[in-house]
Figure 1 (tube, rainbow, N blue to C red):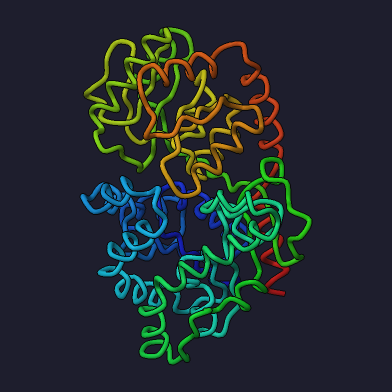
Figure 2 (figure 1 turned 90 degrees about the vertical axis):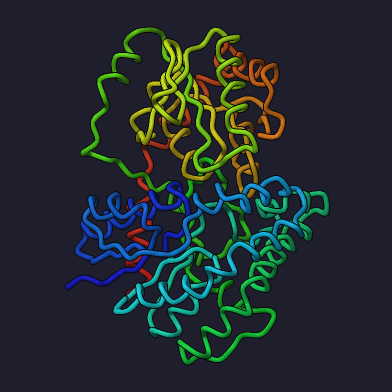
Length: 413
């Protein structure tokens, strides 16, 4: 009889798909896996043969809301950003915690990101082991700063390590009021101090769902930190539409442009910039969006698996989310990253540092001339294509989900 494993997958599709990959691998070894995720991913999860439990918070809806757009506009101010997150999440938090508690009932193992340190609370409540999932480097180190606090690198190793503590403390103080009330009233657990579950989190079992080829493991990470490689998910039942196949056959490889759940302040203007830049660079495009807006040289597609699409492109232009970056790097084609906020500038810098893409173009600097110049570099003879092919071959040889399963089996034993 296998274990019941609950995976907390609150986030965008880029957060859900790696958890889906891990869940499928765990079911193959006999475990029962339940994913807690936004309702919009119900079909994706159940089609993979996993149990589904709905969560209230949908990050795409939050980002597309007027409050979310206001938040993105002020993302360069960390204090305003934290306050904005608190304001948006406040109405959802109580419901989210109740749904997480209900979804975790009967679990033998809980896997969760650092959001609110939910794994810590649920493991105490259920008296079961838990593991923390990191989609970006979030374990303290003196080698580099937290992806959310890049300026700390100017303070050296001490500043780098302090940045991780500061980010975790800020996140805890933002949610502490709601979580402590939940611990007392629903879980029957004592409230935690303003410093939060810091010691327990630092000693916890950690799964880093990214590749040591992309992020060299810092020597000061302890044995509780397991860098497994990216968790890759295929969609075997998906078939490409004839229109897409015909477009790909009708000319040279196009460039994909899509920013996931991110939105600029004026999406229509951004679309005009993208199309104009592609045409000025002499490139065809596959764009994410409304298919009815397609042109002869610009095919607009809806939901299309990146694992199928990206290897057929000349280059990929994206926002730098962890999941999209993983798919782009694995595809073996060069990337141009246009980061918005959060960990996206970190992944954009890694893409550039690895030589598989040009200097990032922040979304707020997206103009026709700037994008045209970057497109010419990423698709030209700058060496990015060959570097991307080499890195893609290295990443496809890794089996991140297998390593993660092996590590979790050690934890439970």
